[in-house]
Image (cartoon, rainbow, N blue to C red; front, side, top):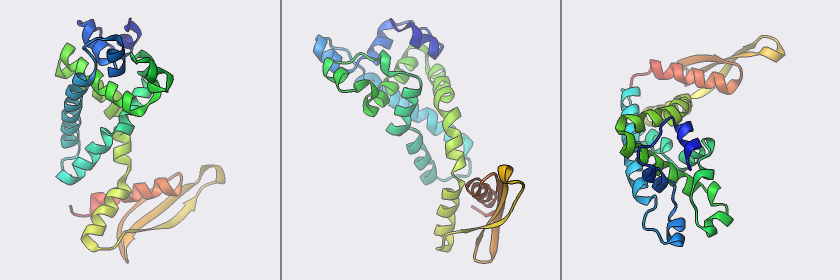
Length: 221
């Protein structure tokens, strides 16, 4: 029944019932009078996801403090992120929903999608162990979301500078070179007259992020 989903997951479940439970919304269970739905697996999957993401952040960002790691973790496991991830892997069409949820767009509802994804992670953990669940999370979430976390150097720099110096960093365009269709922008970031870093990019935003990344390497933590 769920062969196409198993194919996309790269895992054939030993327990078909476990996978079915993960995809069964409580509205369907109540409507059909069956006792099993995905809320318990959602609870389990949430914990597995949190452990995998926390470990990855701990290893990837050895110099970040607990507060910053917590913020990054919250972003990575947020309902918005999980719902987008579930939509990208087309989890919605596989869900078992009650008629009410079916007719009111339940297959695209972020809360239902994110909860079902956590339940699926829980099911993978039960059926194949921590390693399987961790590989799925890394492949489907962390390898993509890492770019988003790592790209926001400006926010991180502002957080550090504002806390330490009580003023925000400022960015200034140094020069723009090249033809109109292939411009390269050079930007510097500083506090007052003190240069913190510099960077280049194909637009000002990209150059500012590069300058902020350079500054983060230069300033003491």
